[in-house]
Length: 628
Image (cartoon, rainbow, N blue to C red):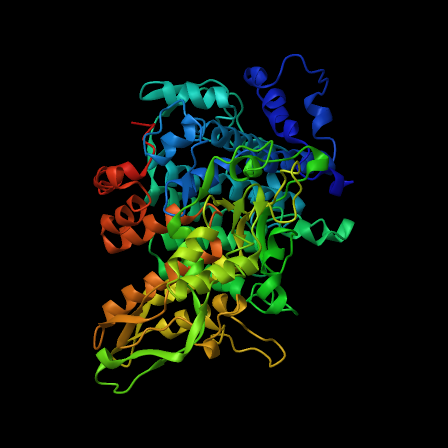
């Protein structure tokens, strides 16, 4: 029963507002024949679960907005001549308040539904507030709703720079908008105050209250909601009560990761703490994922998705990689706009495409090369071995997985593109230019295994590859004192990226690391390296063209390693909605807005580049300032 209902009851989450608070009736289409009473709605467990499914349906409505705002404002995605006015505004950092991608209404819908469901759970199942009582499925539903709401706030504040505090008593979009558009205060006429212990005799109903309008910035959102997630969710034997696992009932393992769950809770907290610079707390939660107890070492990177199997994580939901994924299905009329935005084939509109920077991220990766180092003390003598010049291109995560070339309506074969990269290596400009004439570049990550009209690619919010790279980022900077000396974890960071040798597990578990899983293993001279002398190689010929000297410069090595990890995040996670926030996080950590400004402005035509860079040197312009 539940398998067929997955995410298919969006209307139920709205019914809470209609039934629980009469003022919200306009939220529904008045022409619908809905004869459901409050008592009927919450007669049994399955109705609660159906309402919870509605929250996920509302979250589905956000996926295109998340990708557009998280990628189009960054350096890996740009507009095509087909782009509509809303996309062009986002691309040019000129979003108007009527821009559909800048509109926070879908976030309001999700928050109001979470508020309403949380209120119902507290009223009808006050035991969820009593930490002395063991956890039930109602506690797990409560945990799902708290995670969903915290995630919504976290994303809003990353987009808009600040977020209005939407009080729990506000349970409809109308109430939220009236509150936001009011003066400094707003009177909420229907409000319930729950007793401290959550029992009925401590609860007061329908008490008008005056709400002061206030805004949270990023630090406050993280502080408030991390505290809520850590303290309000029951912890039983060290496991937070988050997520009802229907696998027990229907033998569908994907249920474990298509709802908020224990490891998604850890991922959200780890992401928030990392964003706020709290490496200790971030590592605690992210390591709970990376080192989870499992007979198959789930969420560590082995051969499951290695080499040509890497793209399989986008065709199916697999609990070995997926931590939290929004499920879509054409048969259930649950689709998204990704193919319309990215594909050049009718009836799609091809409005967004990869930037040159994005394509180069994959095409300038090299394997099977070696350097001749005549004298370790004279790096200027180092050169590429003419007998082992290497082979270019990441054809695991790049071509065929994240992007493709299309010419005359046909996708170009990978073998042809491999040949083009060899031509570039040989400086045969005339031949490769002729082959690539009139070629379009497309995002293919949401088209893998899809026919033209499917439009139902799943959207991954958290997955193992991203978590591992978050940990590598943390280990780049995290330091501790031992015997009066400062030690770092930078070796761990390198190992996570290259080969997974930071793990100490049984011999029958082959760790590959992020790059190793994509075929760029250290024994092919293709791992990332941070040495005293770091050689600069021509991205297209692989010839050594210079070097940097970082001898006795720990900070310089950390900056260099951080840059390598951010590039690796681009290759592993391109177009998944996080790139702009990665750039913001690093720019703020370094206190250098030019880090972001330089990378993003580089994708613009020369005539616009200086103006965009100047705009992005001002941090306020990183956000859509609709609340000013």
